[in-house]
Image (tube, rainbow, N blue to C red; front, side):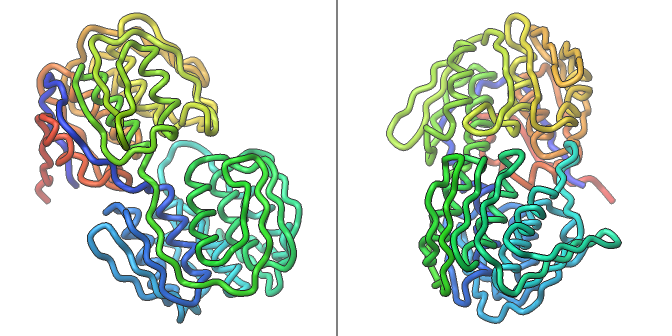
Length: 418
């Protein structure tokens, strides 16, 4: 069990390169199963979740080769349609296998997925969408079986703009007969990236990034080469880290438009955020309180809420954070309080009274974004902070401690004696 040991008080300065987006990479890797050939995916981050997805693809019969920043997936011999329960429980994104295998083999069997414990994330929207395409859904003993040898295009209206459901339905509909419309679709950039990858393989999809996506079914798909978009959540995390440490950081490999919700709030808090070339430059002094409300894209991302709360805990004044997406996404609050943060929870709202300084403490990461929020808090705390259970952080950040070290942070990884 690894832990981070952080000595706070050093402003971050320098340049950091943002990796490819985890939340774009995983569905694209799953989508490669649709093609009976070899696809190459570039800008693939070296993450725990990516390694789990590679293992799942191999168990399905694909050959997977990993190189530095790239992944080659040969799905010609894919035949298995059941994902082992232990892998499904380890990573929620394994649910993307459903749409791809249903589209390719006409059948898939999965258990309910795991991942971060940040609140209920039912897959009913996924199942309703696949059923609308003609799949027969059976749920028994913790498993879900979807069968549909001949899927047919349909008009699917999502009750909520779920990213995962949108992407799963897209993958299943690519080879369905006829035309599929997904209405109230998620608009996230990762959905657009999946559309671009599928279209390179010969799919006919348009509308990703809007609330209506049209998919015309095709009979054949072909191998393609694709580069994943930069990770907007990693970018946002480093933007917040630069601002709250009163640093001076340039982020390379960023699509500024994707980070605008975070940039806008940082500017409102008093930071300077400028787009320079294909990157973003962030500088700041003492920040001012701001209010945050998480919403589906292009609203403020729920995946940035914990990091932003860590920042607001040392901002001048009182801030209010309202979490509209996940009901259990305040698990980091008790740990921030251990470090001296003054935060009060009232239902879906958190009221934060900014303090001058936080104090180092022993804290525990409960999930991916909560964990990195505690790391950011440690960067500005007096004394030493120990963050346990950093395997959560490894799921979504490639070499976090090394990137922070290059910016001047005093952070090291220690492996706990067994």
